[in-house]
Image (cartoon, rainbow over all chains, first blue to last red):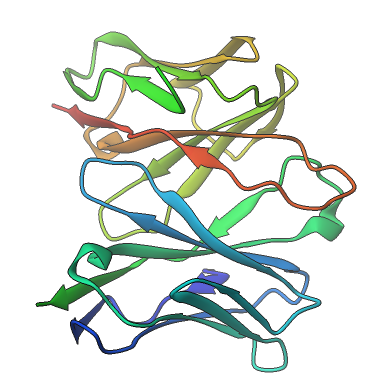
Length: 116
Length: 116
């Protein structure tokens, strides 16, 4: 049973336009969500996160939106740049589980391609 | 060296071989993780070490044996692997969560393992 799902395996966007990457989760105990970006031959790099007490977090061109009632989060990249082309992973953590090390559950990733 | 490093980057081994993967973090973190990423699957957490003590073993077969001799180093010893164990093995580290909440994980570049 996959608790974090990214239903779009790939997304193609023109440079300068908005990229919207989506993520759905099923575990209502998740209370912290993260987005990671991964280039080929590199490990995932932390991008942005959001706590379940918020519905939006913004960092430069990147904004994450959380809809708890729908168990859905999205990552918006505006404007998109060719250097944003990578695999994007959504991840979730259930802090209420009492673990101090932040156990993450990942989605399967979405390949974003930004065309010049 | 900075961040999280992993060696080797690529490894090909037969089913009867014994090999080890090495991870080193230079971030002063006190939790370390092994993940497995198979093709078209989400990252799967394998092991977690918190303050050099193994605190999580996610139903991983005994042919994978982790070792954490100190807070900066993590090993994954491999023995009698199967072809289906071929995957990207990622190491990550983080600070243990404090009152401020979640601390994100920092990943190494991974070891691409092929079992013949």
